[in-house]
Image 1 (tube, protein in one colour):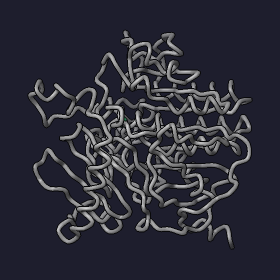
Image 2 (cartoon, protein in one colour; image 1 turned 30 degrees about the vertical axis):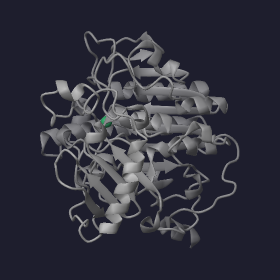
Image 3 (spheres, rainbow, N blue to C red; image 1 turned 180 degrees about the vertical axis):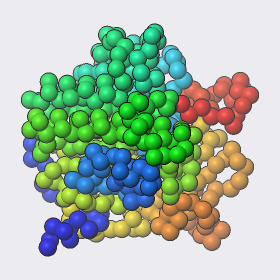
Image 4 (tube, rainbow, N blue to C red; image 1 turned 60 degrees about the vertical axis):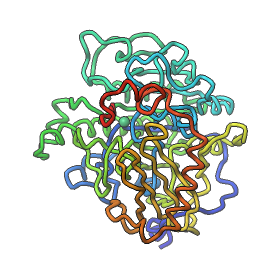
Length: 459
Ligand code: CA
């Protein structure tokens, strides 16, 4: 009786004394621009996608689904900067996407989390999309990844190119590989190669799929699997998702075949809100990639850790990608040094399956977002409240009660002036610690040159 009951329990913050024994392997499976409603494990999964992601769904089924999970950015590159460092990326001027070929990247004085894991004995690998700097000194192998198999740019075609540019070609540790095959399959195969080669060591592997980011180029056999979807764009997008799911399944099968199922943390999540322009569905959220509405920053998130997380758990506690680094350090038996100045917090104590002691409405933690510098849109979440302040619109800040209004339809600011005032004060204080962007909208000098302030590139 207890186990079925446990499956139904929603878990929250609890104190956990000794979750960790030994160093678990860590695999993060990261998709790109996928919709909030586009995975079977999501409670509001769109009907047309319900049966298309059995492998990704299995991670949530055998572990937990996080119902209040966020990225630190609403577009690819800033979101990854936060994920990699465990720090709000605006602290080092990374509000905006890195333009293709830009001669800079994530500040060299910032430390990538993988370096912390290497200090704890981990071998580190990155497969897929980088998007955090092009010059040699910004290369993944220079930032803490022992092994890199992927592309430097933010996206590329899925099929082999006749002539791939230096930033789009798939390289292995700086060595160009031959154009062949289908990109998502190549990343899944490479992940298995890494796992087999490194199985004797504790490893951290980030598989940074480009799928389902455009271009919408499914394999013909995958397009046939999504032919029930009438809208062509959505059908092609779904074709990218089924390939993603196949390759997640490939990685899970590889872990099992190597006997690593029990001692490996597996996380699946997505890098920013779904891109509705390329077919994603974010229901019931409003907004999309590039906005600070929930549809721009709230993401699907599943985590499996057999023997640690009870199967079928739902974790309501709000988490943000910045939390991954301190969580992994703690899971590896290490300690977060205050000198690292992380913004993320370990959520390890929330996943042992003990019934919740807090609810989402009581959560005291504040989360912050901003893009385009001190004149751009900004947002904050504290407990049930979401503050949204689009300074470009000329309208005042809006306040939403996410416990009743996850779609951010009803502005409650006029009825809750004290909440609004307190949150704005806290958001101001946070923002004072941030730098202006080093490039793109809001960067010093950029506004003078830009003729189209409303057009924000999200690629
Ligand atoms: Ca993205």
